[in-house]
Length: 345
Image 1 (cartoon, rainbow, N blue to C red):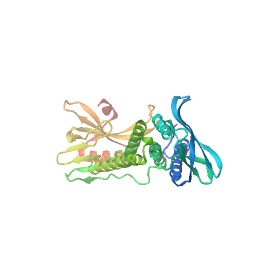
Image 2: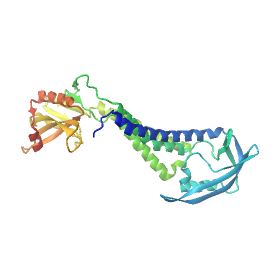
Image 3: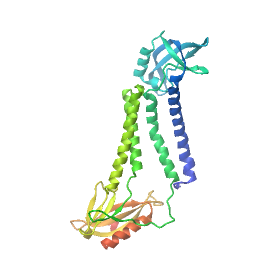
Image 4: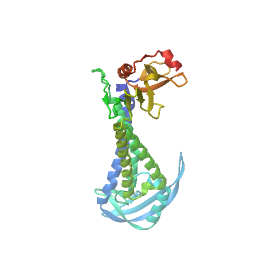
Protein backbone atom coordinates (compact mmCIF):
# COMPACT_ATOMS: atom_id res chain seq x y z
CA UNK A 1 0.00 0.00 0.00
CA UNK A 2 1.36 3.42 -0.92
CA UNK A 3 0.83 6.59 1.10
CA UNK A 4 0.28 9.75 -0.90
CA UNK A 5 2.09 12.92 0.17
CA UNK A 6 -0.32 15.07 2.16
CA UNK A 7 -2.67 12.17 2.97
CA UNK A 8 -4.44 11.97 6.36
CA UNK A 9 -2.81 8.58 6.95
CA UNK A 10 0.68 10.07 6.66
CA UNK A 11 -0.35 12.90 8.98
CA UNK A 12 -1.75 10.57 11.66
CA UNK A 13 0.83 7.79 11.42
CA UNK A 14 4.03 9.85 11.13
CA UNK A 15 3.79 13.62 11.36
CA UNK A 16 1.63 14.00 14.47
CA UNK A 17 3.54 11.43 16.61
CA UNK A 18 6.88 12.96 15.60
CA UNK A 19 5.56 16.45 16.35
CA UNK A 20 4.30 15.37 19.78
CA UNK A 21 7.61 13.69 20.64
CA UNK A 22 9.77 16.59 19.45
CA UNK A 23 7.42 19.10 21.08
CA UNK A 24 7.80 17.32 24.42
CA UNK A 25 11.59 17.33 24.03
CA UNK A 26 11.57 21.05 23.21
CA UNK A 27 9.29 21.84 26.15
CA UNK A 28 11.56 19.98 28.55
CA UNK A 29 14.73 21.65 27.26
CA UNK A 30 13.28 25.18 27.18
CA UNK A 31 11.46 24.92 30.50
CA UNK A 32 14.63 23.62 32.17
CA UNK A 33 16.61 26.49 30.70
CA UNK A 34 14.05 29.06 31.85
CA UNK A 35 13.91 27.64 35.37
CA UNK A 36 17.69 27.63 35.68
CA UNK A 37 17.85 31.23 34.47
CA UNK A 38 15.18 32.25 37.01
CA UNK A 39 17.24 30.88 39.90
CA UNK A 40 19.40 34.03 39.78
CA UNK A 41 16.42 36.03 41.09
CA UNK A 42 15.42 33.54 43.81
CA UNK A 43 16.10 34.27 47.51
CA UNK A 44 18.87 32.33 49.20
CA UNK A 45 19.78 31.04 52.66
CA UNK A 46 22.85 29.32 54.03
CA UNK A 47 22.77 25.54 53.99
CA UNK A 48 25.07 22.68 54.99
CA UNK A 49 26.36 19.88 52.76
CA UNK A 50 25.41 16.51 54.32
CA UNK A 51 26.49 14.23 51.47
CA UNK A 52 29.04 14.77 48.71
CA UNK A 53 30.49 11.81 46.85
CA UNK A 54 30.86 10.12 43.48
CA UNK A 55 28.96 6.84 43.78
CA UNK A 56 28.78 3.87 41.44
CA UNK A 57 25.30 3.49 39.94
CA UNK A 58 24.26 0.18 38.35
CA UNK A 59 21.61 0.18 35.64
CA UNK A 60 20.38 -2.22 32.94
CA UNK A 61 22.74 -0.47 30.49
CA UNK A 62 25.80 -0.87 32.71
CA UNK A 63 27.50 0.97 35.54
CA UNK A 64 28.65 4.55 35.80
CA UNK A 65 29.78 7.02 38.43
CA UNK A 66 27.37 9.79 39.41
CA UNK A 67 27.34 12.72 41.76
CA UNK A 68 25.40 12.11 44.97
CA UNK A 69 24.80 15.41 46.73
CA UNK A 70 22.57 16.32 49.68
CA UNK A 71 22.21 19.41 51.84
CA UNK A 72 19.99 20.83 54.58
CA UNK A 73 18.67 24.37 54.94
CA UNK A 74 15.85 26.18 56.69
CA UNK A 75 13.41 28.87 55.57
CA UNK A 76 11.43 30.80 58.21
CA UNK A 77 12.44 28.23 60.82
CA UNK A 78 11.22 25.27 58.73
CA UNK A 79 13.95 22.69 57.95
CA UNK A 80 14.30 21.28 54.42
CA UNK A 81 16.52 18.82 52.56
CA UNK A 82 17.67 19.12 48.96
CA UNK A 83 19.65 17.05 46.48
CA UNK A 84 19.80 19.15 43.30
CA UNK A 85 22.67 21.43 42.48
CA UNK A 86 21.14 22.36 39.08
CA UNK A 87 17.91 21.74 37.17
CA UNK A 88 19.75 20.48 34.10
CA UNK A 89 19.25 16.72 33.94
CA UNK A 90 22.14 14.42 33.15
CA UNK A 91 25.05 16.71 34.08
CA UNK A 92 25.79 14.68 37.20
CA UNK A 93 26.39 11.61 35.01
CA UNK A 94 29.66 13.04 33.68
CA UNK A 95 32.37 11.61 35.90
CA UNK A 96 34.82 14.53 35.63
CA UNK A 97 32.03 16.99 36.30
CA UNK A 98 30.85 14.97 39.31
CA UNK A 99 34.34 14.98 40.78
CA UNK A 100 34.58 18.73 40.29
CA UNK A 101 31.32 19.23 42.16
CA UNK A 102 32.51 17.04 45.06
CA UNK A 103 35.57 19.27 45.35
CA UNK A 104 33.37 22.37 45.09
CA UNK A 105 30.91 21.15 47.75
CA UNK A 106 32.89 19.23 50.42
CA UNK A 107 31.07 17.45 53.22
CA UNK A 108 30.07 19.85 56.01
CA UNK A 109 30.63 23.01 53.95
CA UNK A 110 28.30 25.98 54.38
CA UNK A 111 26.85 27.01 51.00
CA UNK A 112 24.15 29.35 49.69
CA UNK A 113 20.92 27.56 48.79
CA UNK A 114 18.53 29.17 46.30
CA UNK A 115 14.85 28.29 46.83
CA UNK A 116 11.70 29.03 44.86
CA UNK A 117 9.63 31.86 46.37
CA UNK A 118 6.47 30.44 47.89
CA UNK A 119 7.75 26.88 47.44
CA UNK A 120 10.93 26.61 49.55
CA UNK A 121 11.12 22.82 49.20
CA UNK A 122 12.34 23.33 45.61
CA UNK A 123 15.95 24.45 45.78
CA UNK A 124 19.29 24.29 43.97
CA UNK A 125 22.85 25.32 44.77
CA UNK A 126 23.83 27.02 41.50
CA UNK A 127 22.18 30.13 40.08
CA UNK A 128 22.04 31.08 36.42
CA UNK A 129 22.79 29.18 33.23
CA UNK A 130 25.90 27.48 31.94
CA UNK A 131 26.54 25.69 28.64
CA UNK A 132 24.56 22.56 29.52
CA UNK A 133 21.20 24.13 28.64
CA UNK A 134 22.50 25.38 25.30
CA UNK A 135 23.99 21.98 24.46
CA UNK A 136 20.61 20.37 25.18
CA UNK A 137 19.10 22.63 22.50
CA UNK A 138 21.86 21.57 20.10
CA UNK A 139 20.91 17.95 20.62
CA UNK A 140 17.26 18.79 19.91
CA UNK A 141 17.93 20.77 16.70
CA UNK A 142 18.13 17.79 14.28
CA UNK A 143 14.79 16.49 15.54
CA UNK A 144 13.21 19.92 15.08
CA UNK A 145 14.46 20.16 11.51
CA UNK A 146 13.12 16.67 10.71
CA UNK A 147 9.75 17.74 12.12
CA UNK A 148 9.83 20.93 10.04
CA UNK A 149 10.50 19.08 6.79
CA UNK A 150 7.81 16.51 7.57
CA UNK A 151 5.30 19.35 7.80
CA UNK A 152 6.62 20.82 4.55
CA UNK A 153 6.21 17.46 2.81
CA UNK A 154 2.77 16.71 4.19
CA UNK A 155 1.43 20.17 3.40
CA UNK A 156 2.89 20.28 -0.13
CA UNK A 157 0.61 19.33 -3.00
CA UNK A 158 1.64 19.65 -6.64
CA UNK A 159 -0.30 22.23 -8.63
CA UNK A 160 -1.89 20.75 -11.73
CA UNK A 161 -4.30 23.51 -12.62
CA UNK A 162 -1.96 25.18 -15.12
CA UNK A 163 0.09 23.41 -17.81
CA UNK A 164 3.82 23.34 -17.25
CA UNK A 165 5.75 25.95 -19.23
CA UNK A 166 9.46 25.64 -19.99
CA UNK A 167 11.34 28.80 -19.03
CA UNK A 168 14.54 29.47 -21.03
CA UNK A 169 17.00 32.38 -20.94
CA UNK A 170 20.19 33.53 -22.66
CA UNK A 171 23.49 33.76 -20.78
CA UNK A 172 26.34 36.19 -21.45
CA UNK A 173 28.18 33.59 -23.54
CA UNK A 174 25.21 33.33 -25.91
CA UNK A 175 24.05 29.91 -24.73
CA UNK A 176 20.35 29.23 -24.30
CA UNK A 177 19.73 27.75 -20.85
CA UNK A 178 17.18 26.00 -18.69
CA UNK A 179 17.65 25.89 -14.92
CA UNK A 180 17.00 22.36 -13.66
CA UNK A 181 15.94 21.64 -10.11
CA UNK A 182 18.82 21.00 -7.74
CA UNK A 183 19.00 20.82 -3.94
CA UNK A 184 17.18 23.85 -2.56
CA UNK A 185 19.14 26.38 -0.45
CA UNK A 186 16.78 25.68 2.46
CA UNK A 187 17.72 21.99 2.32
CA UNK A 188 21.43 22.85 2.17
CA UNK A 189 21.03 25.11 5.20
CA UNK A 190 19.14 22.40 7.10
CA UNK A 191 21.81 19.79 6.39
CA UNK A 192 24.55 22.20 7.48
CA UNK A 193 22.71 23.00 10.73
CA UNK A 194 22.11 19.32 11.47
CA UNK A 195 25.73 18.38 10.79
CA UNK A 196 27.16 21.29 12.78
CA UNK A 197 24.84 20.76 15.76
CA UNK A 198 25.56 17.02 15.93
CA UNK A 199 29.31 17.62 15.63
CA UNK A 200 29.29 20.29 18.34
CA UNK A 201 27.06 18.17 20.57
CA UNK A 202 29.40 15.16 20.25
CA UNK A 203 32.50 17.31 20.73
CA UNK A 204 30.95 18.97 23.78
CA UNK A 205 30.15 15.58 25.32
CA UNK A 206 33.69 14.35 24.69
CA UNK A 207 35.51 17.47 25.92
CA UNK A 208 33.23 18.41 28.81
CA UNK A 209 31.57 21.31 27.03
CA UNK A 210 28.24 20.57 28.73
CA UNK A 211 29.64 21.84 32.01
CA UNK A 212 31.63 24.76 30.59
CA UNK A 213 30.79 28.41 31.35
CA UNK A 214 27.95 30.06 29.45
CA UNK A 215 30.19 31.88 26.90
CA UNK A 216 31.38 28.48 25.60
CA UNK A 217 27.82 27.46 24.74
CA UNK A 218 27.04 30.84 23.21
CA UNK A 219 30.18 30.65 21.06
CA UNK A 220 29.33 27.11 19.96
CA UNK A 221 25.87 28.25 18.88
CA UNK A 222 27.56 31.04 16.95
CA UNK A 223 29.59 28.42 15.06
CA UNK A 224 26.43 26.43 14.22
CA UNK A 225 24.58 29.50 12.95
CA UNK A 226 27.62 30.56 10.92
CA UNK A 227 27.67 27.11 9.25
CA UNK A 228 24.02 27.53 8.27
CA UNK A 229 24.60 31.04 6.88
CA UNK A 230 27.65 29.95 4.87
CA UNK A 231 25.77 26.94 3.48
CA UNK A 232 22.90 29.18 2.38
CA UNK A 233 25.20 31.68 0.68
CA UNK A 234 27.12 28.87 -1.03
CA UNK A 235 23.89 27.32 -2.35
CA UNK A 236 22.62 30.66 -3.68
CA UNK A 237 25.94 31.36 -5.40
CA UNK A 238 25.81 27.97 -7.12
CA UNK A 239 22.34 28.76 -8.44
CA UNK A 240 23.42 32.22 -9.57
CA UNK A 241 26.50 30.84 -11.33
CA UNK A 242 24.36 28.39 -13.33
CA UNK A 243 25.58 25.22 -11.65
CA UNK A 244 22.22 23.52 -12.34
CA UNK A 245 21.72 24.99 -15.83
CA UNK A 246 21.40 22.89 -18.97
CA UNK A 247 23.19 24.95 -21.63
CA UNK A 248 22.62 24.77 -25.38
CA UNK A 249 25.43 26.37 -27.44
CA UNK A 250 24.15 27.06 -30.97
CA UNK A 251 27.43 28.37 -32.39
CA UNK A 252 29.60 25.51 -31.16
CA UNK A 253 26.72 23.06 -31.58
CA UNK A 254 27.29 21.53 -28.16
CA UNK A 255 25.14 20.65 -25.17
CA UNK A 256 26.40 21.14 -21.60
CA UNK A 257 24.74 18.88 -19.01
CA UNK A 258 24.76 19.80 -15.30
CA UNK A 259 25.77 17.29 -12.59
CA UNK A 260 23.03 14.73 -11.94
CA UNK A 261 22.81 11.41 -10.10
CA UNK A 262 26.19 9.64 -10.48
CA UNK A 263 27.55 12.39 -12.78
CA UNK A 264 29.54 14.60 -10.40
CA UNK A 265 30.76 17.17 -12.95
CA UNK A 266 29.35 19.02 -15.94
CA UNK A 267 29.41 17.04 -19.20
CA UNK A 268 29.78 18.63 -22.65
CA UNK A 269 28.22 16.73 -25.54
CA UNK A 270 28.46 17.42 -29.31
CA UNK A 271 25.12 17.66 -31.08
CA UNK A 272 26.14 15.15 -33.74
CA UNK A 273 26.82 12.53 -31.07
CA UNK A 274 23.23 12.60 -29.82
CA UNK A 275 21.22 9.76 -31.41
CA UNK A 276 17.94 10.11 -29.53
CA UNK A 277 16.16 11.42 -26.40
CA UNK A 278 13.61 9.57 -24.34
CA UNK A 279 11.58 10.15 -21.17
CA UNK A 280 11.80 7.08 -18.96
CA UNK A 281 9.73 6.53 -15.80
CA UNK A 282 11.57 5.48 -12.64
CA UNK A 283 9.66 3.15 -10.30
CA UNK A 284 9.59 3.05 -6.51
CA UNK A 285 9.38 -0.74 -6.19
CA UNK A 286 10.72 -3.69 -8.17
CA UNK A 287 7.13 -4.58 -9.13
CA UNK A 288 6.98 -1.32 -11.14
CA UNK A 289 3.66 -0.33 -9.61
CA UNK A 290 4.27 3.35 -8.85
CA UNK A 291 6.36 5.93 -10.71
CA UNK A 292 8.70 7.96 -8.49
CA UNK A 293 10.10 10.30 -11.16
CA UNK A 294 10.68 10.73 -14.91
CA UNK A 295 14.24 10.79 -16.27
CA UNK A 296 15.12 12.47 -19.54
CA UNK A 297 17.85 10.33 -21.11
CA UNK A 298 20.21 10.84 -24.03
CA UNK A 299 21.53 8.06 -26.23
CA UNK A 300 25.05 9.07 -27.35
CA UNK A 301 27.61 7.81 -29.83
CA UNK A 302 31.05 7.15 -28.38
CA UNK A 303 34.44 7.54 -30.07
CA UNK A 304 34.64 3.81 -30.83
CA UNK A 305 31.25 3.80 -32.56
CA UNK A 306 29.34 2.28 -29.65
CA UNK A 307 26.39 3.87 -27.85
CA UNK A 308 25.91 4.82 -24.25
CA UNK A 309 23.14 6.28 -22.16
CA UNK A 310 23.38 9.55 -20.22
CA UNK A 311 20.62 10.85 -17.93
CA UNK A 312 20.05 14.61 -18.12
CA UNK A 313 17.78 15.14 -15.11
CA UNK A 314 14.83 13.75 -13.20
CA UNK A 315 11.38 15.35 -12.86
CA UNK A 316 8.47 14.64 -10.51
CA UNK A 317 5.92 15.09 -13.33
CA UNK A 318 6.01 13.66 -16.84
CA UNK A 319 4.88 16.91 -18.47
CA UNK A 320 8.02 18.63 -17.18
CA UNK A 321 10.29 16.00 -18.71
CA UNK A 322 8.27 16.01 -21.95
CA UNK A 323 8.53 19.82 -22.26
CA UNK A 324 12.32 19.74 -21.94
CA UNK A 325 12.54 16.78 -24.35
CA UNK A 326 10.51 18.66 -27.01
CA UNK A 327 12.72 21.74 -26.64
CA UNK A 328 15.91 19.70 -27.04
CA UNK A 329 14.59 17.66 -30.00
CA UNK A 330 13.70 20.88 -31.81
CA UNK A 331 17.28 22.16 -31.52
CA UNK A 332 19.16 18.88 -31.86
CA UNK A 333 16.83 17.52 -34.54
CA UNK A 334 16.71 14.03 -33.09
CA UNK A 335 13.81 11.72 -32.36
CA UNK A 336 12.69 9.53 -29.52
CA UNK A 337 14.70 6.41 -28.89
CA UNK A 338 13.02 3.06 -28.35
CA UNK A 339 13.26 1.37 -24.94
CA UNK A 340 15.26 -1.45 -26.54
CA UNK A 341 17.84 1.01 -27.84
CA UNK A 342 18.26 2.63 -24.44
CA UNK A 343 18.58 -0.70 -22.67
CA UNK A 344 21.22 -1.86 -25.13
CA UNK A 345 23.16 1.37 -24.51
